[in-house]
Length: 337
Image (cartoon, rainbow, N blue to C red; front, side, top):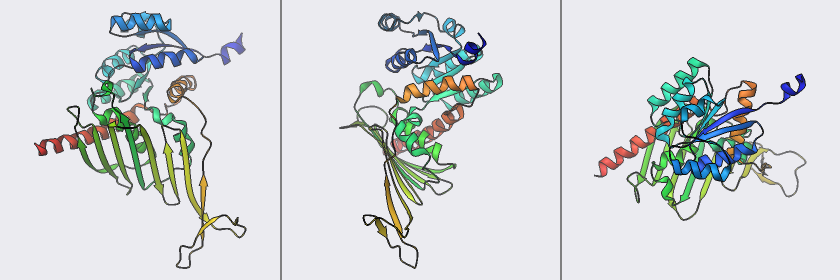
């Protein structure tokens, strides 16, 4: 059966963490033919029993045994325990998918990356917006952005207040922006307000990059409505990405041709420069589940031995900038007191 062996590919996967997001991962993994779910582990006995009964998936009472029985490990636990389970999996020789942020501290991330490189193992980070179909539709049109504005607003949910809004919400936009701005961070300015928790619930951040690009990010977890939008401005175009509604709009300019439509919008820039025609484009956004897509690509990366789309260093860089932002916010808080 050589043909069957060459074309059929399935990874045995173990999931650690069966909370809100962990259950979503388990449900989606059941739909993906590239995986066989070995089982899952959660340190809460009641959660293990309930999820095992509801989803019909084997619950392990020991994380080490689950890791040993799996080809790859999916870590969907609270951030504080990411490092613990990642190191267990890496020391056991397993590739890992780990939810964002990569770890609680930069030192933990550095140790994790060093071990993965030593053992030749892959790490993919769950920065899910990179797999959002609206962002994917816009990616090929983004080149050398010079100003970016991102708003990530969420209605209040007590589940998210155990971590700062920067790590809960803003880090999504930090990762997206770092992926499209190919430059080092030069300066960060912040402003934040704590309303219902001990850390800022609303934060506004201005990031200046060495190449001159400026990104203005706003995140809030006490808004009246949900919003996840990014606006990207570059030399010849404006790109709007709605991560929530999965829509993309591109407004660009090109030199006016001789046979323009009578309905074309033409601008005369003056100074003897050629006229410009404004074009409006709404790329087709393929319907897809971003979490399912990132899990699917994780399997493909193992099959093809390729670098993860969102690798451990991407996660490290996003966490580094997030920490710089939180340090600035804490200084502001200290000054106010």
